[in-house]
Image 1 (cartoon, one colour):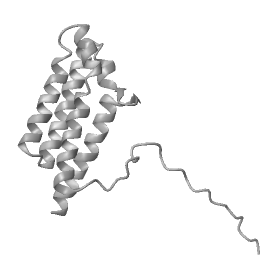
Image 2 (cartoon, rainbow, N blue to C red; image 1 turned 90 degrees about the vertical axis):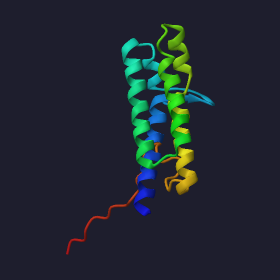
Image 3 (spheres, helix red, strand yellow; image 1 turned 180 degrees about the vertical axis):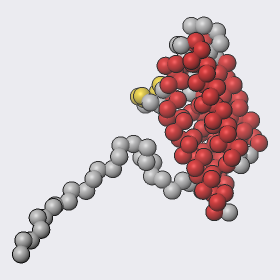
Length: 143
C-alpha cells in the first residue's frame, strides 16, 4: 500500500512539473503561457511537444492507477490540445491559449488526492530553492 501511494505521489509531482512547464512558465492571474503555447507557433515542434508531454502525462496516470473516467477526461483534454494546432495561425493561437496539459494534469492530481490524500510536498516545492541558513564560521583555536 505504501509503495502504491509513493508511486501515485511521484506521478502527482511529475504532473505538476509537466503542467507548469507546458502551460504556466509565465502567468498573470488565471492566464499563463508555457512551452506548449510558445512552440505552438513552430509547426512541427509544437505538435511534437504537445503529443510528447501528453503521452508522458498519460504514462504517469496509468502508472499511478488512475480511474478510467480520469483517463478518459485527460485524453479528451490532450486530444483537443494537440488537434488545436493543426490549422495554421488560428489553430496555433487557440493552442497557445488552451491549457490542455494543465487541465489533464489537474484531473490526474485530483484523482490521486481522492485515492491517496494530498501530496506531502508544500505548495511552493517547485519554486526557488530554500535559502541556506547563515552559519557563523568560527576559526579553530590555536593551542
